[in-house]
Amino acid sequence: MASTVDLLANLTPEQRTATRELLDTTGAVLFRGFGVRTVDDFERVAQGLLGELSPYRGGDSPRQAEKGFVYNAAGPSPSRLLRAHNELSYAPWHPATLCFACARPADEGGATTIIDGHRVYQSLPTEIRDAFRTKGVTYIQHLPDNSGDASGIKSWPETFETDSRDKVMEWCQSSYTSAEWTDLGLLTTNRTPGTLAVGSDHREAWFNQAHIWRKDESVTPDVTNLDRWRTRFGYGAIFGDGTEIPAEYIDVVSQTLIDCTVPVNWEAGDVLLVDNRAVMHGRLPFSGQREVFVAFA
Figure 1 (cartoon, one colour):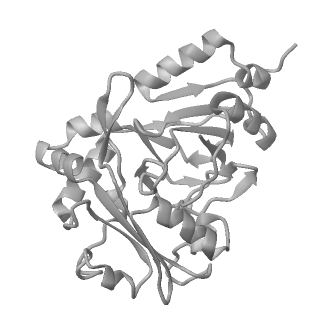
Figure 2 (spheres, one colour; figure 1 turned 180 degrees about the vertical axis):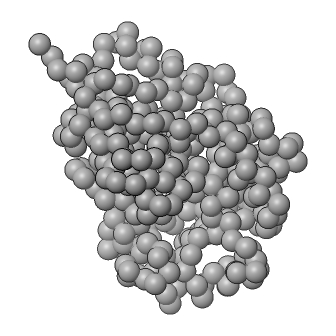
């Protein structure tokens, strides 16, 4: 008799069709009661649901690979809120689908949050959503050569999962809007859409994390000038046309994201599929041990 893990890892054609339809219309599907508790179990389930898994290449968050392309989804310090974002929306590639699993819920808090990008888009003032839809976003990152920098920024070898300068620059020059070595490390820019048409109904969804990457000009003067970025490590975001994103826009976006947030309160063994283009995700602060895995495809 097949285990519940096997059942989830080997859905029938009818079950796969139903899952795809649910994911297409809702953006997220929660599987509960299948007892996915270990990294090995999750890897089988993730491969069964997603197919070939992808590396976290180019990502800004600290992620530990548990096995192959299965990562720990611990996130930043437990006391911090992980703000809403689409995975790798700032990079030249982003996964279409995310798969999470909870081996152990936190003692308190720690819900993974999901945020419907279409609801966010509809809730924003027309002026703001049209600016992001028509201009897009350019992300700037200056990464140090070595890990452990006081800035807390991941080094480029950590970010790209290789210490080969040639490989990194070859990939960056073919994928990013611009890339260059500096006296300090690697400086890249990447222009991406600010919104996307998602689902079979082509509904417009918010798709960016400018609210996380944008820097205040009082901290980083003239954020649109790359010469300023060559002298400091960090991340930044401006509009795709090279102009600064107004601070008041970011305030409205940040509050709207909070208003649209729905928590997924984990139970041990849960598996969550998320359409990364249609739905943003985050994490609430927590206390105690928490073990959540994630895979990308």
